[in-house]
Image 1 (spheres, rainbow, N blue to C red):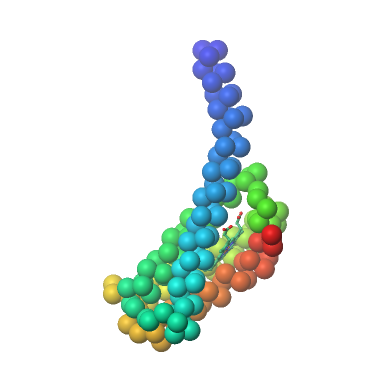
Image 2 (cartoon, protein in one colour; image 1 turned 60 degrees about the vertical axis):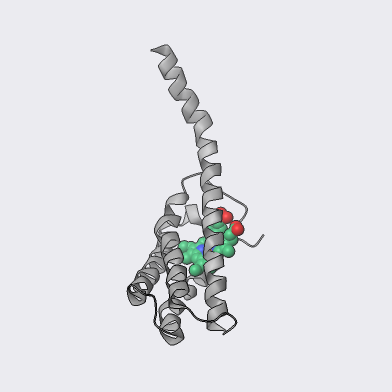
Length: 145
Ligand code: HEC
């Protein structure tokens, strides 16, 4: 019995910081994927990369995956150099930014359909509202490093 209690105690004290570190890494990796999808989207919008419906769809899917899981990766204490303390101080405001991001990606997924946005104009209409939400969240909740 004592061993069990001790084991639980150890897991709680040792497990918490390791968990926080894991989520910080996971969310940074996910935001990097977000950045990569934004770079491909920007390249196609500027005509530097030829437009492809499949690539447009993949970029939108990457944004959507991030929008759905990003908010789960900010438990108490999971601070980082880049994450503003305001995320925890003003959780409602952060959640509102997340909700805007999720609404925009859900609409883009719907617009993309099965085969992806048919042409560059359709892609632009679908993806621009998503890209607009990056800036507004970063302005308030991401620190420059
Ligand atoms: C709801 C808020 C929010 C939205 C929306 C958001 N970001 Fe972020 N982003 C953050 C925060 C917070 C960090 C810092 C996370 C950390 O390192 O702890 C970050 C970090 C990043 C990073 C740096 C990743 C790294 O290597 O550390 C990139 C790139 C990025 N975001 C791109 C984007 C793009 C592109 C979009 C839009 C498609 C976007 N973000 C939308 C909050 C957001």
